Length: 228
Ligand SMILES: Nc1ncnc2c1ncn2[C@@H]1O[C@H](COP(=O)(O)OP(=O)(O)OP(=O)(O)O)[C@@H](O)[C@H]1O
Image 1 (cartoon, rainbow, N blue to C red):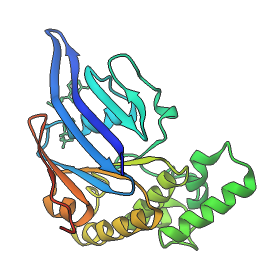
Image 2 (image 1 turned 180 degrees about the vertical axis):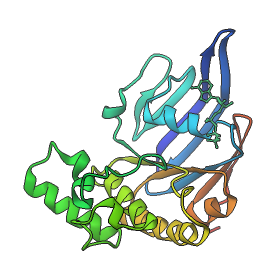
Image 3 (image 1 turned 60 degrees about the horizontal axis):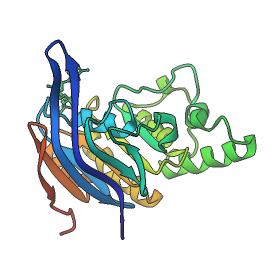
């Protein structure tokens, strides 16, 4: 199978007073459709920078990002974020407090006909195990339930790739552990290709088909399939 996502010899960095400060160098990986990849590494190693580049929020200084064979980013090409078919679930992207769960999930579906929006919202709420939560507001849901609604919201537009940046870090240990397993099952049921970043090794191993260890902006390993 050809890779769904391929990162090819990426260089990423930030412009500073002294010129470009490179934070990611010669970074390559490939992920098959339906697989969950995880970037594991200490704070500051460049994990979020890689995710932001895939989402289209950081320019690529060298190399190339491809999704389903289409070049999203290279030094010459930069597809805008909204045209990438890349969804995101970031810890700080809380639900809209004034909207109920169903309207939160429907947020990215506004261009679809109403009947299709309803169908997708019901399907996504069922997928995350909260079929009856549509009329509840975020403050009426537990932290774990809120994250499941956030996942439903991210999956509803059917992105080609879902990015998850430390999605569980606000939750307590027990909820976090349970949700890691649940989210893996939900992503697998949806056949969703996804990339997770975390600095928690147990979470990475429990969640991902492939785990890449990052060290100072380079990938030192990309294997360790969860199921051998
Ligand atoms: N907007 C920015 N401008 C300049 N430097 C930045 C910017 N964002 C991140 N950096 C630097 O890039 C490096 C990598 O940051 P990044 O956020 O990708 O790391 P991370 O591995 O995701 O860390 P964490 O786990 O703490 O989120 C760090 O040295 C950071 O200081």
